[in-house]
Image 1 (cartoon, rainbow, N blue to C red):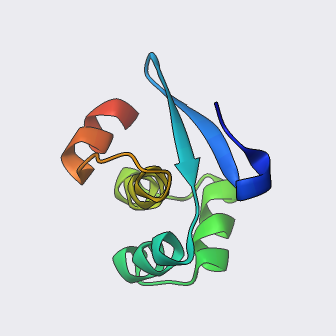
Image 2: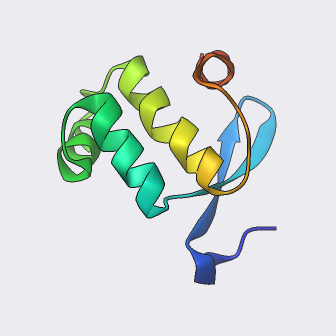
Image 3: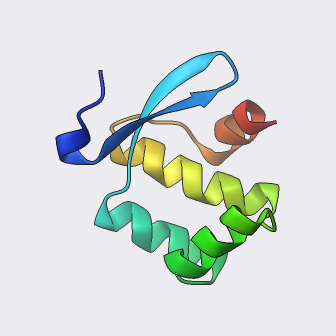
Length: 80
């Protein structure tokens, strides 16, 4: 069960419903992995211009922020 008061949200990847949370650590990891600010990354996502790698670079830290322990390869398979 997600808690919106804590900034948690539910993500559906394939058949799995997972909890995600964008912590400060997750935001830093996203910026470092994508080489751009989270605002620029969000803009690319909303415009449909993000690569699969960039999408995985957003989802994996968000899942980790909610206590899930998936490595990027696992997330890539779920996104695919």
